[in-house]
Length: 385
Image (cartoon, rainbow, N blue to C red; front, side, top):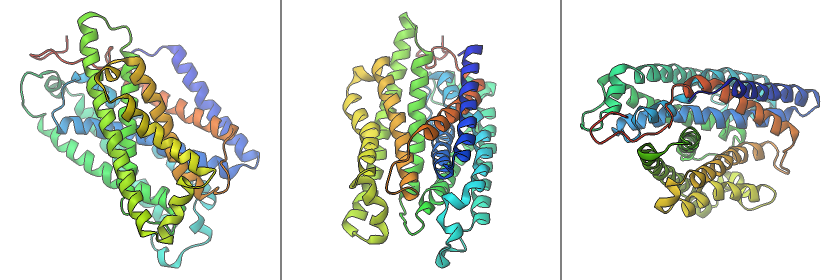
């Protein structure tokens, strides 16, 4: 993929728009709204970037070579946002008094765990580990011997040893550290709520959103393929569409497994977090819309073979899915801070545009390494052709 100067200009303008929106929001007295949507976007975009690295690791762990090297390059293309996300994470410290209620009103029974210094130290250390590990992972993934393995689909050999070991470490660190992020940056916003399944639910959402983003970019990059290349391209879209579909079902399984236990237990310390998000206006309607966009639409539309192989259909479902995941992150974060109304206006729009621009700018170097079409199923006896 060869993004042009116009693309860079648009993304830079979007990023600048976010900076301006951030400053204007603080100056206009909307500091709480600024920090709410800042956290929502940080979790959303950083989840896509980190989930993409874990997606690549899972491809190596399962010997997935159905997309050739293009599949790996696309999953890893967003690694450039991880250092940006790491820096932006520390900006949250400035808004800690607005975001974390326990800073000014500490809970004695949780004071050892929920204190700003310890929280930012452990989460910052975790994100630093993931960032450095991800860059190391991508560097090894781009080695000549690893790329040769990815294009040699005619044999059943494992990836090079360094890649196998890094993939295992990457997957384990992702699940552990993103569980910690879920507990610290989402669950602690309502510090009396707890759910042992929430970490798995949260990082599964990040992983799924990376699959959806890969599918969307694969469609955009692969436009214009023809002949044998188009057939192989659509075969690869079919495969990633199945992954899209399956992980959507797994996400809703975790959602239901978490919800049903809270529902039949009916314990106030658990239900107070869930009930406003699914039963009462205004948040209930928004919570259900996330379910529809992330699960119901993909489940109904992508059930058959043809929709997965049709770029227009798969792309539309992908866009709706990403909107749904952004709404889901919004519903997880904001009701804990603004329970009686949905704060959405120019502040939220400008900051979201800004994060999208930053994400795009940081991802451009990785996207330039993705071949076009993005996903090409290797010929039967190796090579990408």
